[in-house]
Image (spheres, rainbow, N blue to C red):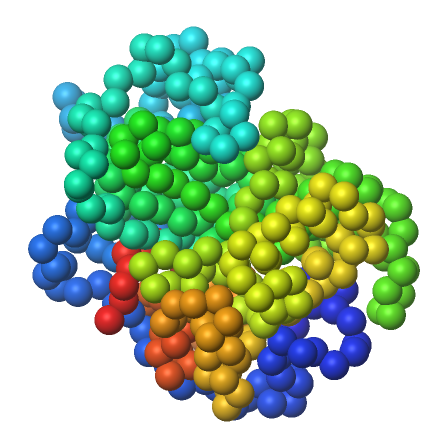
Length: 402
C-alpha cells in the first residue's frame, strides 16, 4: 500500500485497480534501456538519467576537492532561490545579484503561461526558427517530488540544460508528467525551475510544458482549504492532513506564492503529442471529466476556479487511483482511453515502476532496480515514474520508445 492509498475510498474502483490479493499476478512488460549507440540526432548518449538520492551525485559527480584546477564545474547549479547541489563551489547565490548571468531576481513576478520574465541581459544563442522547420525532439520526464538536485543532474545529462541550469535544447519539446512537490527537499525549487525553463524554451523555439498531477491537486487543496473537514466514506479528513500524510513539506507550503498557485491551477490534465497520450495518473478516471482532451482540461480548470472542497476532494481521490493498465484488463483500459482521446500509446507517471512491477522490496535490501521506462499493457502503456523517492530513478526519455 502506497501512502496515497490512505485516503482511498472503499467503494468499487472503476479505474481498473485490482484488489490486493491479485497483486501477485504481475503485468507482462519490458524495460527500455539505454542503447549502446544512440540513433543519429540524439543530443545525449543516454535515454534516462539519474538514480534518486544523493548517492547518484556522489558516484557520478566529483566533489569540490576532486575537480582539477582550471576545469569547469559539472552542473554549476540551479536557479537562484533553489537548493543547489551540495558539491557546488563557490556557494550559489540566492539573491540573483551574482553568480549565474542574467538570473531572474525574486521580485520579478512570473507570467502565468511561460514562467518568470526573462531579464534583458540574458542572451539566447538561438536564431529565430524557420517557419518551415519541423518540431524538435520530444522528451517526457517522470515524477520529480521535490528532488531538485536529481532533476538538474538528469536534465544536464540529457543536454536539455547547460552547466548553469538554463535551457540548452533549442527546439526540443519537453513535457513534465506532474507531481513536482512532496516527499523531496525542494518542491518549490522544482516548480521555479520548470517555470524558468518554459520561458527559456519558448525563446529558443521549443517548449517546456507540464501536466497536473494528483500531488498538485493535493498541494493546492492544502493551501486553499487547510484543515477544513471533508466528508468521505473513509471518514472525516482534510486536505492539509492528507497532504502531510503523503509527504507534504511545510517549507514548500510556506514558500508557495500567488504566482505559483496561478501557474499550477492552469496546468492541463492531459495532452496528445506525436501520437502519445500524456497523463499523470494510470487511471481511467479522466473519462469522467470529458470525451476530448480539451473537455477534460476545461473541466479541471473550471473545478479549480469555481468548485468547492467536496468537488476538489472527489477529483483528488479519483486521480489518486492507479494500476488501470496492468493485468488482464489493462490492455482494454488503455485502449479505451486511446480510443476516446487519441494516440496509439499512453505515457504516464504516478505509479512508481517498482510498485507497478512488484519489485519494490528486494529481498537483499538493496534499492529497487529500475533500468528505465517500463513498457507494458501489450506495449500500449509506458510508465515513467522511476521511483526517485524510494531510491529508484528520476526518468527522462525521448519519445518514441521502440
